[in-house]
Image 1 (cartoon, one colour):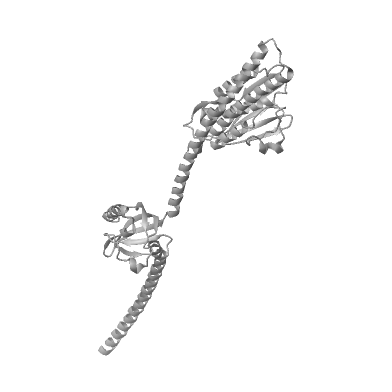
Image 2: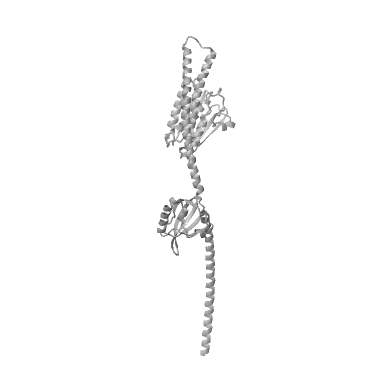
Length: 415
């Protein structure tokens, strides 16, 4: 009986041992799978570290390089074995090493508690002496030996070169702007003064001939009229060119403008000028406008645009006994859309591309006078404010000029 009990216990222990052995094998298999996954994860993250498109540098709290990836090695111009153990600060220009040391101290003292890296821009020097620009993003990590600093090293040389090039171009543009201002001053002073003298003396000569007993012959009178007209045209051209080039210069901050008031003043000035020049004899001129908005804009530029367009409309309605010019308005989500519509002679839409070019005209001087600068000036002012301008027409039925302006004015013209 005792022998049977012993045999039974032996069988039970053997079964328990087999169960434990199976469990141990299962645990070993699970551990092997875990180790395999850890190895794969390590390799995966090692590849991410090694082949990252930016440099990764791990430094001790004293700034000695402990590890660096391939990109970082290429950036510093040396192989990893020749970099490990060297002070990272040696690869910064001398004037920035103190700033880096202070940054590294702040990162290490944070104890890995900071959520965002500390950043600085630095001028780096590779092993071969090649200078380049970098952005350093530093964070602290907890390692086996204590705290270390991880530096993400991004080459921003292209960006910095572009910024330096932009600054150089800005300086050059400023110099050109100053030269243009000098030219405009010379144009206004050196050309306008003799032109006005010619116009004044020609006027005195005409008055003297009219008051004398001797009546000039028709040929001399015609030459004198041509001289006066040529002097007047030269003055108008000089003024127009000056306004055209000045429109490209920076202006101050915009101001609040009630366009109803601005347009009504322009209408009054237009009516007065037409009456003074005798352009309303035998014809009626009607100037109207929609309810217009209050906008934030440069007053001078707004007056330039609408003076040119209203004047243009009045000129080309001259053959009409009942001339009509209307300033319209449509509000968009982000834009103001204005129109200047007339019932004048219109133009061939196939020639619309020439309208806004300098010195381009669709009609001869015998039909309608002009210099070919007014609409070019309009386009220059509107486009520098971020807007656009275009025209539509049916020959013989009039034309409509459209001006689209941004509700938030572009700052390009202020730069």
